[in-house]
Image 1 (cartoon, helix red, strand yellow):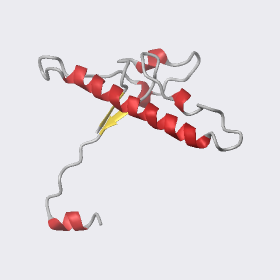
Image 2 (cartoon, helix red, strand yellow):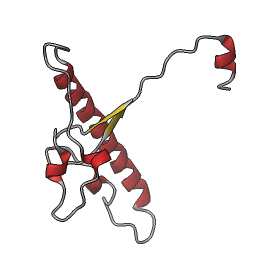
Image 3 (cartoon, helix red, strand yellow):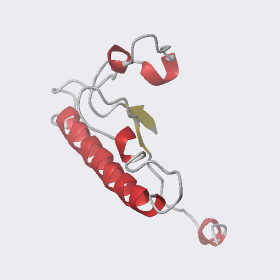
Image 4 (cartoon, helix red, strand yellow):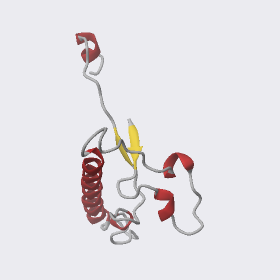
Length: 109
């Protein structure tokens, strides 16, 4: 698996003033060159924006439900999920390998 900020290649540049830089979270993206893997960078960015967009929609739905809770500020969660250069999300790409034996499959139940 690997982590990737979905918008900026150098997420530390978009931290709020005075916010500490966490090297494990705010290090720069490193993509294969276009010659090594044509289209990967553009496709990875597009997929990441889709994921963030789904997260934003989910946050809106959660907000809609939580607005019924006394004292919950309207739109509080959705306000934290946004896209664009100032966003500081981290996408994680996981690849799960297929099971090799029936015993492995049975162990998941």
